[in-house]
Each structure stands twice: as structure tokens, then as C-alpha cells.
Length: 190
Image (cartoon, rainbow, N blue to C red; front, side):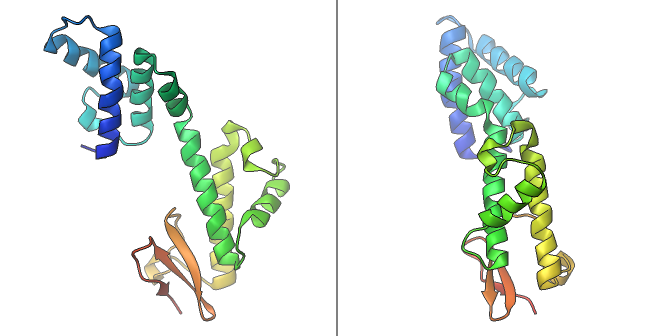
């Protein structure tokens, strides 16, 4: 199973409402399973919940189930799930840019990049179709800062350039260090 326990619980909660809306009370187990498998297949191309990936496919299955259940709150939540994830990544990348630059917030750097690209100053005003491109632009700037300002050369030297939303950067004297989550020790690389 690729879905987390929380995702499975969310699915079964919405699915119970969907079954109650669509199927008669006397529906057999076979009819219920057939409806579920067909709904999953239509949404993401696989017939089992075990094969649903935890991001885009999960969002599609949840949107289909919420539509069947007439659950408008869930439909509103899942119809913008991809955009919410991208916005979260933009926020984390902005935080990391600020940490790398030694600023408490990375937004001035981000706003300067937005202006240079001809985008609105606030990421909230950026069109949905440009959100992921905006994240890629910020991530490129973050990598450039690591290479140019701190001499990082990649994971093979213990200086990862790839994006990790839980990564945080801090100074170890004059050297920039990082940690990949709150439980990790700060790795200072000279």
C-alpha cells in the first residue's frame, strides 16, 4: 500500500458517504466492490486502492469519491490539491533562500525574482498555470546561491543541492550547514 494511514482513513470516510449516495441500501458486497474498483480505475487507471500513488492519483480518486458523495467541502479541497502542494513547496523554498542568504525571511529575494520574470509581487497572484514554473525558478535560484556563495558541489561531496522541503540551513561559524528535519544534527561541511 502506497497510501499513508491518514490517506486511507480519508478515503474510506468519503467512500462510505459515496456508497450511501449512489448505491441502494440492499447493494451486495460484490456491487460495492465493483463500484469502488470502477471508480478508482476511471480516476487513475488502476483498479485497487493499493496501487494508487499518494499524490496526484490520490487526489483524483478523492475528487471522484467526493463528487459521488456530494461532499462539496471535500471537492473544494481536492480540486486544488496540486496547487496547494506547489504553494507549500514555494513557501519552503523561500524560507530556505532566506536561510542561505542569512536573512530572517526569503521573500525579498523571491519578490525580486518575480519582478525580474514579470510575475506579480505576491505568489498568491501568480496564475495557477505558472505556479510550478515559479517553484522551479526559485529552486534554481536556491541552487545557484548554494554553488556561487557557499561553494557547494553536490551530494557526492556531502553538499546536497536537491530540494527537500524539510531541509533547513544554518551557519556553523563561517560555513553553511544543513539538516534534513528536526531530528537530524546540523551537518557542517568545510
